[in-house]
Image 1 (cartoon, rainbow, N blue to C red):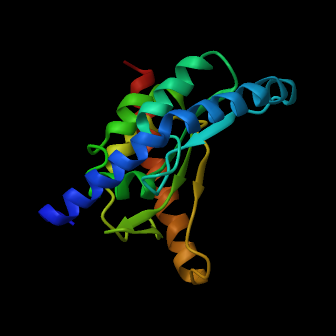
Image 2: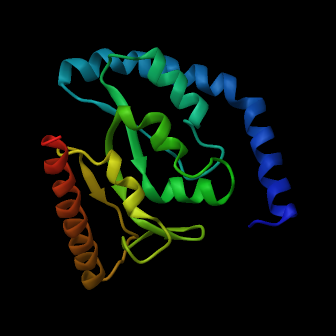
Image 3: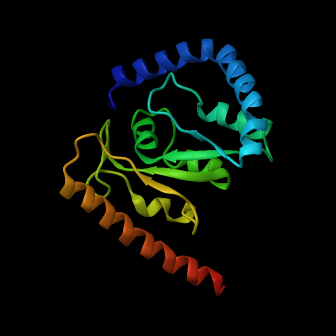
Length: 180
């Protein structure tokens, strides 16, 4: 990572993906269009999660298309902290880009840490700056701790404790914002 060879490889793969993306985006639009009325009747909001692999949809551009096309419908952005970190590390997106662009459509988060390209780690034990997420965390936002299978029980407890402390800290800023 960070080498010319790695950057060239990533750019080549993104170019290959972009050659095929149109047809797949159309299929995704078609599928979501069919799901919208069902989701609305059931009172379900469809969460579009940022993906780990470069070739998976939606990409940031496709998010923009989907959220514009279905604006006002039962659909929103689901942020995966580790997936975002990986794509930032690979240079696919700039740091913070996804939440800056789609934070107003945020409906939930998969919450875990990452170190290099290894994600689904215990929050607070990797490279993710969780403080950068605070502006996007709202009172009723679902946060799902998403750890690797087989994570030891004590590490799960650390995840819960980290998240609890983080949310208590975030809640203080909600109270302060209410007084301004």
